[in-house]
Length: 409
Image (cartoon, helix red, strand yellow):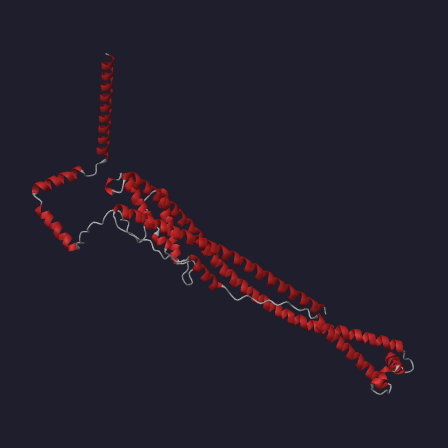
């Protein structure tokens, strides 16, 4: 019975552990899921806003300075939230079924009761048969017959004339208790072993479920982290797009809509504004999930490109534009035809034949003059430059002195 109780306690602990592990795993998965959906919704909002602002900026510039329409930014952008929901559904698994472990006390009680009654009936029937009483119901309802049976059980069966009915009653009670505990222990042991086997199966299923949940959670967390970085970079691009949009409106309002009459700094700002607007186009038209790749290679590449674009915007250097031409404002000039290597060599030989000896001598002298100087020549040139600077400084000082004297006179 103690072994049965130990098995039962172990089974209950295993089931309780399974319930706690599954609950914790589901809670962590749901939290990661919510963070992923929030990050995806934020990215969708930023992408939509950034696409509209960059499109408006390019449209304003093209209509103002070239008189034509431009719609380079895609209108239909991949929905990050929809892709995230599809990924979550794909990674979801069937919930594990955890049934409560029944202790089996009720069943073991009835089994022990029946076996105890059967043992008492067998002892009474054996005693009645031993004293020569008929096995009829009336026999066991007669007090005299019961006393005879108890006297036989109490000692007459091994010491005739020394039997005691009270001793027989005690022996029957002991028999009933022994049968009761044996039957109950056997029944509980069987139920406990069954429960333990069931609990171990439940624990194994829960472990497998939690492992799948953790793997899915890790993939969702990785995608959520990538989307967060992606959203932060796009938000920075949006801020710079807003800034360039405001600056362009100010330039057009103050300096007019003739590109040739704009000041040089204004032209530089407009060129950077166009480059910034075109640089975000490949960054927003990407899918975040691609089959088993989470995040997708396109998203990873977009993050790397966005980092380069943001770094260029912050450091005010040339903005990289992946896969997009940077020439926007100025009209495209007709490109000369591409020459083959043989044509280039032939033209070079013709040009060399047309050069006269005098021109060759002049070219040779120019090359000698532009040849790199030795360290001694460089030091002499520097000394001459310093001497010249000192003389110019002295002359300017003398001129100022003469002017001052004339003014005093």
